[in-house]
Length: 288
Image 1 (tube, one colour):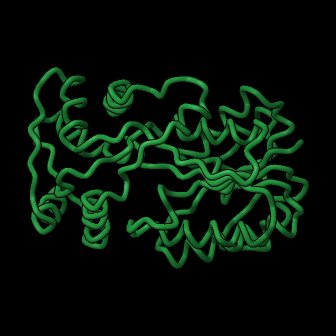
Image 2 (image 1 turned 30 degrees about the vertical axis):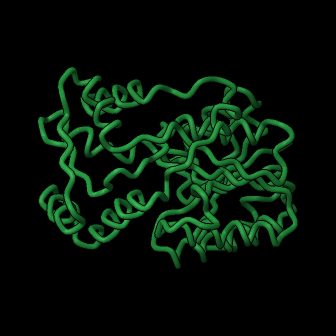
């Protein structure tokens, strides 16, 4: 059985590839990447590296050929671009005769007010329409998304937020990626939707976890959206990204990521990585 995945040179896909290599013969793994040169480390270990570019749909037919089970890792970019790219990938999977598709989606994609949700809602629809068995991996928020705030807190800055009492199901990227690998190699996941999440915490509760790792209190500064935008601008966030980071805070405030589920623990077959360990790993990586 050939297992394929896209985005294997990205942060998420690289972890999935490593996890697959721990349990699947390398010759049974196919990675579709935009720049094959960046996947030479995988090729050297026996993984079949193929050129596949979501912006060049003609490359995807060969990239997915012979693949039985495929993980489509959601692309980056604006919503319209991502929808177009995902449609190209799904269509290519159909042409290649892929027998199963796993897709990295977002929390409560069908109803979420999060500005990213339309991409995932639409892509899930594309996949359902194919009739190919699927699993939707609805990842909540990566702890790594808070790396800037964690590093700022380590440097003595307050934890600035406009998310109010909104709660988030943070978990480490590694846990989400290992869950994806478990689905690709496991049985009984056909036509399932998994809401993958850690325990739902407020900003104050996450800041307390960070403070525990740092050994000091991390003050939380609640501001309005305009104030948050101003703080982020002064921290170096580019102008084009400011509406995005503010929209995330607003969505959290409105409960878009306030969802708790045991799906992630169940797929991993183990407890989640403690957030304190994730924070410590982030800080140590910053020092490396």
